Image 1 (cartoon, rainbow, N blue to C red):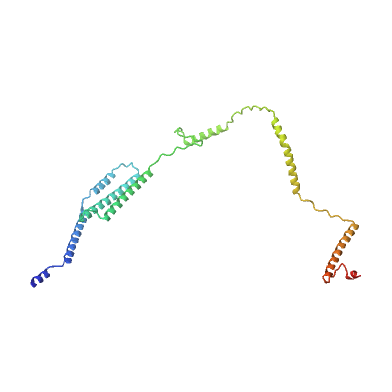
Image 2: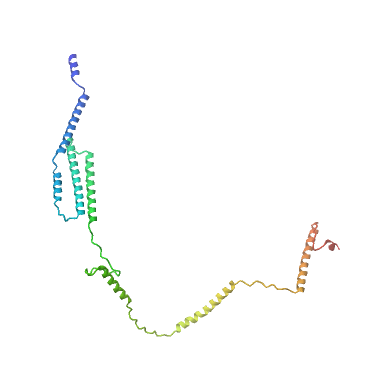
Length: 278
């Protein structure tokens, strides 16, 4: 029993070793399939390349009357389409190879994203090419309009345009110089102005009052003249002096009485103390 157990242990391997070897063999097979697919894609017959060659050969036999810039523009568009077709063909080949090499039939997330981005790029490129073609198309010129809003559609093609414009301008100038005849004016009959006279009589008194009021306001704003200085007689000046001195003396006497009542001494220059004591 011990012999059989030792032989089984020597010949058998662990489960992890068997699983690792199986995964390694599967990876080797998948790598070989991928290399074979790449070699096959490099040597496969591409019918689109033959179509491009036939187009290039037919382009050489085109009519020589076509302008050079138009030829260059068409060649650029054709080369761009060929490069895009070639890229799309290579992308489709790679996608088919990668899908065949995978065990499951569903596409991976990266492949789906690449297809979506490619489709978006193609649509954007097509829109850009359509916009360029539309911009390069020659559009008809707008019809010019004269100064008075009249179109020049009916002008004679044999007459030069500058001459036609000159004739129209001269015609308009002559029409503007023509003066229409003046119509005879019928003199108006003067009717009775009693109503106007009555209204004027009512407003005349108010006008006079307003005039007087304005004159008074102007006079009130005028500054009065400065006073006139004149010499007065000597007798009048003497009386004025005596009256003022009497007023000052009486004032000094009152001040002295108040000081005496308050037991204060007050000396006046106008009234001496000796005169009071006497």
